[in-house]
Length: 287
Image 1 (cartoon, rainbow, N blue to C red):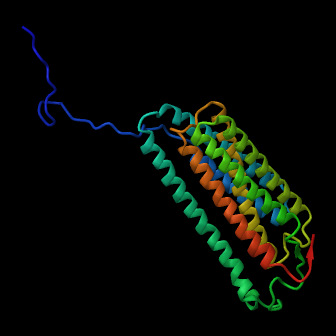
Image 2: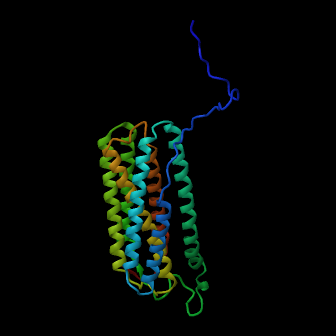
Image 3: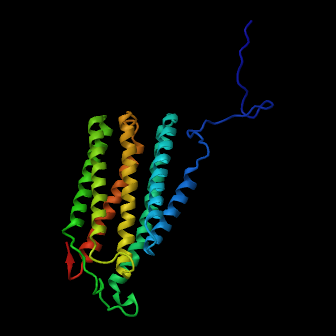
């Protein structure tokens, strides 16, 4: 005689509980949130030190630490993603929601920066005692928008095109197009950063201790450049995953969120180019 064993109904029996499987796999403790906070503090302190003419060493340490933490954090995220193969749709949607919220917070950060800029753009008499009510200030010779800023704009527009091609390659399973497009976008991002370094080295006005305009110019362009740096790191990590064959038509949420972030940075630069370099140019511009 055989005896059939049936599971007890939920709530019946001693010590028997019903568990509902979760699509999310718990992860261990991570040092990277604390590390990114320390790196950000070092970077901010380094920027202040440069402002006060105390050298660039602290800023260099902060930026290198920031890049290292972003890289290592991204590595751990991708490694964890390889272990979480179930419920890809739910996990992918969580990535999208997280990136959408992150982009929203960054958008409001730049709203605050642009608020400061447009406060003096529309109301130049608010600059304070000793300043003529004109914007940009009379002593400022701005950068010719048809020079390096136009080059940077064309680079960013082209990078969006190459990244769109890369994403199409991911969706269609064409890994060659995906890798070539991602690599091209990465190179264009580095070209943008190189152009920004060249611009900083040849500014027609003093960047530090130069008044309101240089301060606003630096905070707007430097934060945009910092976002491009983060985007370049993310693109490098995406390229590494593409080489391992991890992105494809059924697994593309991570690549999609990186594309969203890069598009945000691209649109942000276009707004910067129009408002800061083009509309905000002074009567005298320097190439």
